[in-house]
Length: 322
Image (cartoon, rainbow, N blue to C red; front, side, top):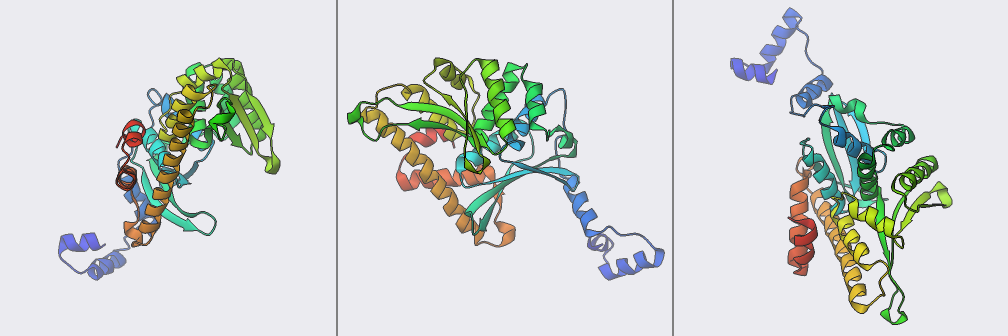
């Protein structure tokens, strides 16, 4: 009504009275919000072009991201305190020409400060998310490239590449490394391990822990695992950093230089996480309407602070690429 009033150069109460007199129905607040969101451009789902998009979105959905269907949009979101995870999500979304990722600082007693990262997809994407994770795995097992893409995103989103190094080079022990993933859904982890082992002919170990947590491991003492890791199309900057180190260091004697490089990489990841949390704490103090920011701006600000505070441009230029 205020818009109509401005166009007619009258008070909005006048418009209201005429609506009442002639019985003209008015939109509810929820309808207005829904219409406003629907007017924002969202690329519709295209089955002929979005095969990889569907694979990557399902990998996120099956691990650390949540999907909500409302206001004629599909919202996909997650919480994180790591700048690498924010950049990872942003790269996936922007590479498929979807809506830009937004980040809002959040706080709670359990997680302290972190970022809620989210984007909205067109309502035509509603049907691409498969709730039955095992059925989705079965649909991918005959397509090696699709399965490799899915497994890569699963590891990047909610898994890890671990480098196990002795505390000292004096013991002359060798450096170990492995790819890992864990979840409480035992059947899903077990079936994922079986399909990866059968399809790529690599050794996969599954272990069960307390609180119903199930983990799978791919030890890099086997050259087949190294070859698989090399072929994984990673975009997560921190996983790329760990992959580079794992491929070069796994099986090597732990020299002082290698141990120093591994520790430096761990330190960089930890410092970037601390800066990401620091920025979330600062933005959380702003007015609620000014807290959120674009993912690109958030990544740029954290990396700028890192470069200025630690005077270190090597890791930023190589792995994070401002």
